[in-house]
Length: 102
Image (tube, rainbow, N blue to C red):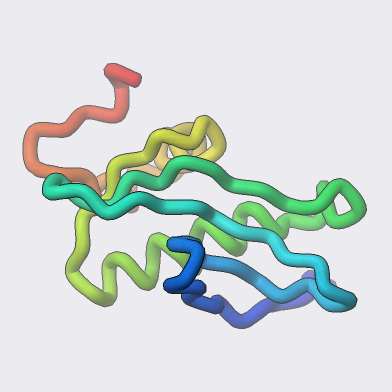
């Protein structure tokens, strides 16, 4: 059974994160820009890889941006591939922005 984590918005470090316990965190870094939030890096500690944590983190983070009505610009290869596999999230991209060009 997959464990579920609570999304944390770390505004000091411009990232969304999951507290994995014992000081370990999975996170997505972002940079605000006029076109939307540039999602620059996704990281899961090696001890937690292969458990679906990155997928859960991306879904939770994208869900938060959708809830807030914000746009995103994926620059992290994991998020780019995730949106390619799950085009229902492409509505978060700025108008005219095409992920296929990445």
